[in-house]
Length: 172
Image (cartoon, rainbow, N blue to C red; front, side, top):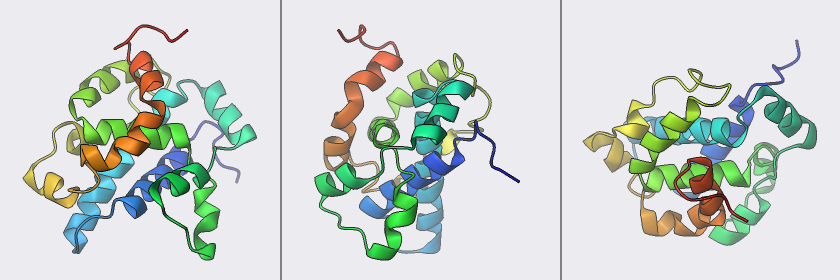
């Protein structure tokens, strides 16, 4: 059975995995699970906004995501050779937009609102850990939500993200 051509899961999961490898949670299974949930929610929301229609997702699958090469160079992470397969599914825009969401939880309100204008409305599920992180959520993502640490990645595509959220006028 072939995968759904409008499924964003591979890109969202790879982008979340990249974020977790670059900004790992502190030790412990609970911290890891909470960080994974938040990274996945941010990746899924960012992917749904970046590829708002089924046609956009089909084009993504046809043309392939950008991969993690530039992100790896920016953050100084040289991936091990056995890690390269899933990294091809990382999308630089999705990671950058997810980093914006993680670094500034106030943006998630606008992002969830913007999600309603896409064909993915209702598919992102419950985003509470992303939109209203609790104390344990924040402790588990001390690096993953640190604005200064995320700035290099978040800044890559922040203007387009803010334009997508209608928070700044369209870029020329």
